[in-house]
Length: 403
Image (spheres, rainbow, N blue to C red):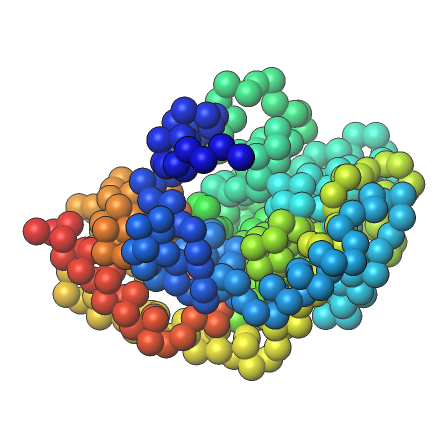
């Protein structure tokens, strides 16, 4: 084995330059803390972009992975496996769904949902009912199909020609959507909370209106809950808080607590359109991923854990408000559960990444949601004392920026 040191410089030497990772390299995590190669400790308010919802190296997830690793790693979808069947049944028991398709990432789950919507329309309606409506700004993944549906030019530039038959209308603008939807619309996809695009929650009136118009026009409603799902908002899935049930729901990120897995949930009638051979993925439903997700789901679906998320939301908002009273850097604090956003005041617009760097220097990991918004997505079970210490570090970071 090559014994040369592993340093950050190796990224620039050997990796495709589509990322710009920080100078540190984490090597160990426990709960809501990480340690880098130098042994420096960090409090994690980023959660791997809302992925490590139960923190790092949760003992029940480690045990599930270790046990399954000694049994069966992979069999392909020529065969099924016990962890996948158990997870599918449990997801159906806990949600509106009757059928589940497993994949490996949010983009794959959304790709499956969009393909299913078009296939369902092809099976049941006239050939011109193929149009998909999405909202701006939004983010649904990085495949060519999903990035086109996301509709943000910064993610599509240079990848043209893009898939046709996709239209966009402003998020939370029900009147504009009502003008756009028609009998040609086969599906509408929406994030209940915009994650990458600013941590903006849909209004109940908007989602209810979208649901009613989709039903009226026989268009399938897809909820992208890749980021808002798996207990992140204080409900198992955000649709439950809104009282609006989609036809298809996609979930990923926190589902495996850090192990790559995603799922598309839907009804039996709609799922029937993905008949044998119509869609697939080599690793989807992998026994390792499903075993870990079963253990994770058991924890984050617990009503006490979900109640804790809602309570910790208030702890964070109180602390962030206190910081803002001192510095005035946020124009608005928003979000649901432990998906939180701080929109920067006018004087700081465009400088969200400066906050990430300053926080890192203070031993705190945070996120951005565009150039003008700071995003926090910590573990759902982060202890109150680490919330307090993390907010203290954020306060010191902001003080440093202002000095």
